[in-house]
Image 1 (cartoon, rainbow, N blue to C red):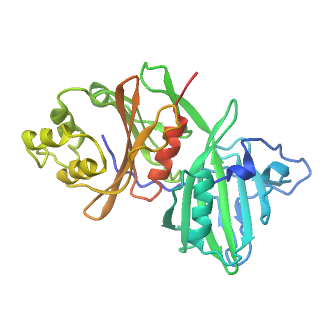
Image 2: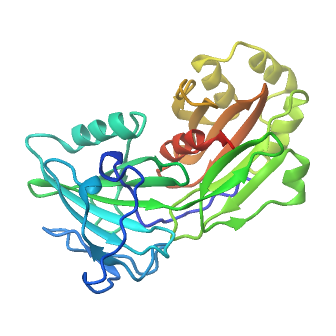
Image 3: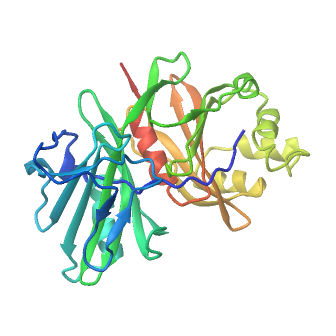
Length: 330
């Protein structure tokens, strides 16, 4: 079920202050299509070959909606791609650290959350964020990296098209990035799964598994749910398990539950965002000091659902928060 997939996406992020979900049509007389993006300075070319991005990007005029005070912006578009826009922003450090500017952006556009990652193109430290851009008809996942380049910060920002999926027959839907492979099988369906997919190695999005959490027989359910880790059964007895799950759920109980399963909680948001229509919980999980997955929990009309994001790379809680923000009704 919870396949651990290594997925490598072309890093994608569009700051909400620069995009606002609006679409800018490519100008016919602009530059020739490109298969790499020039980040300038000491970073140079960022190759798009072999990525989930298109191969026919054109440099286009960045309209007012893409501008941000203090930033130099270069905008590219390939409207047939899964990533129709890519923007490169450059600004002076002005005495700020990489962590400080990342936190500034995260507080504004990513629910206050960012992660430190190693950029796979340049090998340098970078800061990863993920959020959403939406209007009346479209919802985009924006994700990406902020890097240092001498006296400047450079942001490589893309946003990804999405597809609407149903959360069973609840009347609630979620947006997930396009380009996935359907992995839903009968065994998962028998255990309440409503959606399961994986992405190619170039997409840098995690494997998704979404299913209904049962009200009874929780020990038996978790025995199956964690069977890829514990093939011979859970490492605690049913009596020990029940003593934990019967307690009031809070951060301490959360840690106790996962620790009893041999899992460390490295990030937890018990109440992610109470303003969301379907507020949820986010848990980033490690096993033996290595990232295992991110687990989400959310309720629809009193019924709980779990979303499992499997990836050995870092962008897990950030993507999870965007998924929770995508839950909606028609």
